[in-house]
Length: 183
Image (cartoon, rainbow, N blue to C red; front, side):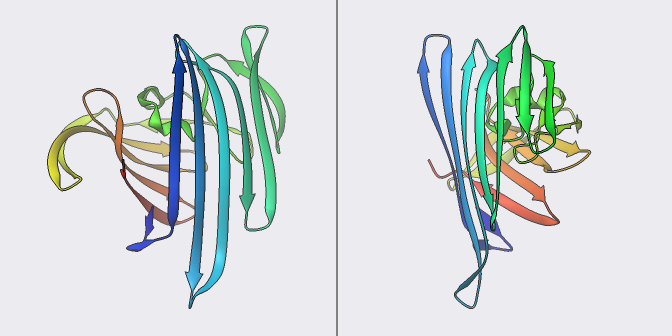
């Protein structure tokens, strides 16, 4: 992950599947340094359980420069029950967190759960536009989706023809973070 051209951290997403079940672990670790001193530190780990492409359970722990938060959600009575900093509520199945941008289904424009506050955030998504991008030194075809949230993270994401995330630019807290696919 890069900010103003400088490498500031990594966002690792690991997948484990078994039949119709998918476990996803998302680990974000970044540090902004000024003169070799860490001026800002952000760490986040999310653990999702999906079944048949529907989020069944998640737990996201965030350490935001000294402030710790936890967001949890799980399926209860045919709804996704969400708990976090802003309280508790239920939302229809199909909701996902803002960490789920690895999943092309996030471009369908459904509200997303903020991974720090648990707020349900509305997003608007521009239809995907095919374009050529550079990926690992080679030109490849991808679809670009611009996503604008009413609050929290916004940005642009690119997916290959198989629906895999290949590039992202995330706007958060007035900063632009560029994601480059490493593996």
